[in-house]
Length: 205
Image (tube, rainbow, N blue to C red; front, side, top):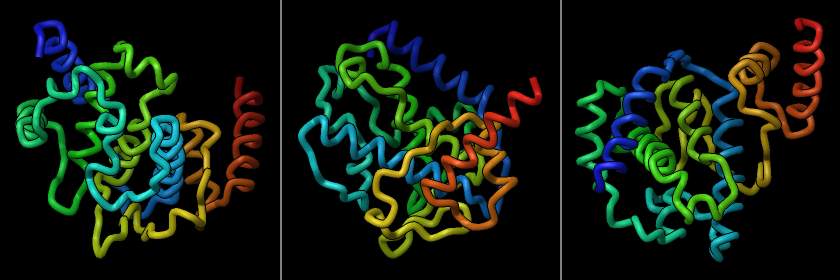
């Protein structure tokens, strides 16, 4: 990596260390919504790049940089070297069947290269922010028997919730959903919660 990229990389890791706030929840309805939201964004970008596959059961399937094929792809550290840097910054993560480290890796490199021509061409915010917020809330994204274990729920059906979109991933809105829901809301219910939240915020101001 160049000196400038090295500096950006170190800054993103430092910002992550200073700003990430773990809530350590055992059960979290919102985390499933964040994962659905992430998959909608991931599949959208993949389609833009000419890939209609919705396979998500390998690590590479989540790496949009492999689809984008940017000029800087070979400049990225291998993931094990990246894990050493996470330890250096004392950033919490797990590996193996846990996807924590992978999603932090992808989030960090999107941030490092967000001003590149390739990332700008996507006209999209960092899609790995949703998984990062999951890690803040419940610490882990775990896979077992080709299923995702997220916030006390099993996620195995991408078709059922295809196209789900959170109106906002603002933390206050996410906490509002959590305060109102015991079961996972569908798209219509989530949109209704967003309308309620906006009214609530307006009354507060």
